[in-house]
Length: 121
Image 1 (tube, rainbow, N blue to C red):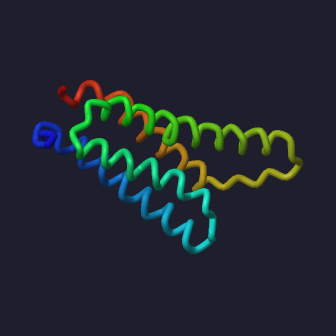
Image 2: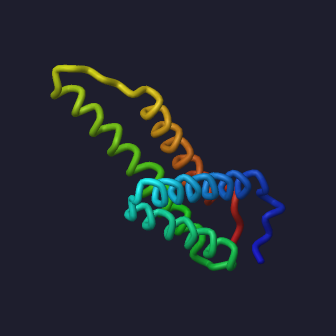
């Protein structure tokens, strides 16, 4: 079992974010019948299993997950919203949605950068 006592804050934040994202995706999948929400759920559960199973690939898994799902995805959504605002005549900005995406991007950078510094082999 991995020694989490050295970096309790990092892994605590990581597991809390994963639990929140899994619950949001389960809610959207069940309520709105958006079955493509099963993809991030399976990736997030796989990440938890990889970390808890003491796999040697946990660092690269955290980097892939944070880079792809927390940095690239929300960044593309913000770029798409910006392009849509520039093209359309009416400017309708959902600030809360953009702030949520910015928070995901910041969390993604935190997990991506700190995984090498805060974890041991």
